[in-house]
Picture 1 (cartoon, helix red, strand yellow):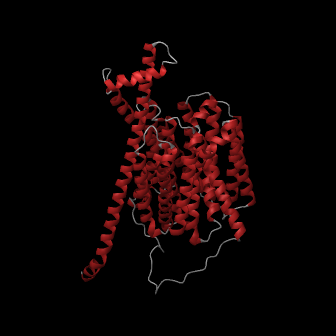
Picture 2 (cartoon, rainbow, N blue to C red):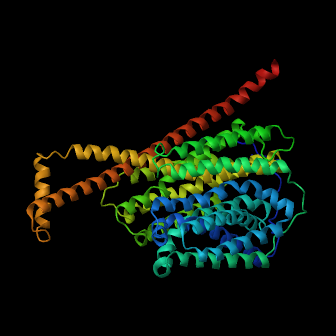
Picture 3 (cartoon, rainbow, N blue to C red):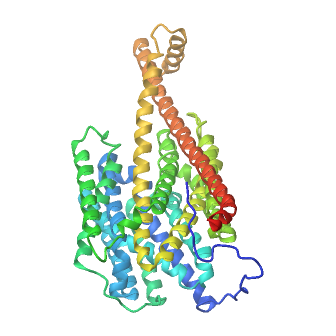
Length: 551
């Protein structure tokens, strides 16, 4: 599912012509460099935790606010919409107003919004705060990248900085599930706000004490940039809203969902029309629709959809099975450790020419892990899925970091102006792809659950001897609590129907895991065939060269 990208320096020249290795020179002293790396980790974890706190604790938050989980899902929408749209302007804002001012204003804004979150007492105020948090946390991703890359020499920026900072981004939402049960044990959602406020204050101190090197300010913003940004924001925001709320409202049961999708697509189409007719566009649409970038975009989106098995699969399944959040702490701690282990493996081995190999490994891990998960039963517990989920967690960083390296090198090879276009591709495929994957995964499970429940109920014929015996056993167990035999039998039949519903849910998740494994396996086979085709083309090229020279 990947294509080769020609990048200067990626080839391996013969020893006779290979230049002598240059000594590694760090841009700053060791202690200060470590401080910058620590700042990157803290800032990256801060934005990751902000993203994960709501999604990891949605039922508890709904209870604190006195609303249904369906209405509480609007909190996720409120956070994600600005996160999807705002990165489009961040690079230009940074160049326009200066890096230091950008960093200080971004972190100060996050601190103030975190402070305002302490006053949340109803859904309306919670939505306003979550929208503001989404806007304020979006620059933190950019800052984490900058703090990680600035103290590293050029040859280590891609090899060390990129895997570590991406690992932090992936670990953040998972770590939110690890620490949330302990943090919320006494004070509920307000304790999460206090933790976020403390992290925001720490980020502000780090940004103030460790200023980034600020390049000269450049006037890069144009009035049409804001027009294009608003159109793209409406488009991506509308699609994100539809993907999050679609499964909750059954997609076709709420007409406003269809109109939201139509408005989003129309807004994106208008943005494309505006950008194609500009001399200095915000996004280079022609480059974005080139075969190479379309292939990379499809690859990133497909893998993000596959990774939804972990975010929308295991946690929700265990919640339906009655497993508490505190019982899943070890599972997500193991996933965090596996993600970090994958990042360390990349630090040791990542090279531009090895991208395809890492993608093969990642797809194989996802296919095997999802296939292992497809054997779930109503008795499955988190300890039995640690190995498979760890494999999928490691696959995420093993795929995304090399893919981002390839995209960055492809953009930089054409010039710094293309960097913004690639950034929006990566951010949109990850943010929008995550919402889309979760929505599609949930919708598939709902349909398969209805299918399995219908089959189970149809098999529960009143004259079936096994069903009659099961009702008799269940009613005998209820005899001590219910004196009326008829009422005990009715209660026993209701419990058996409830058990059938749980069984249908588990079977639906098993189908979703099998589908994930099949998609990952198909992508793996396609990548192998693609690499084989490239090998054949490369092998034939020397043989065809003399013939072309003679003609």
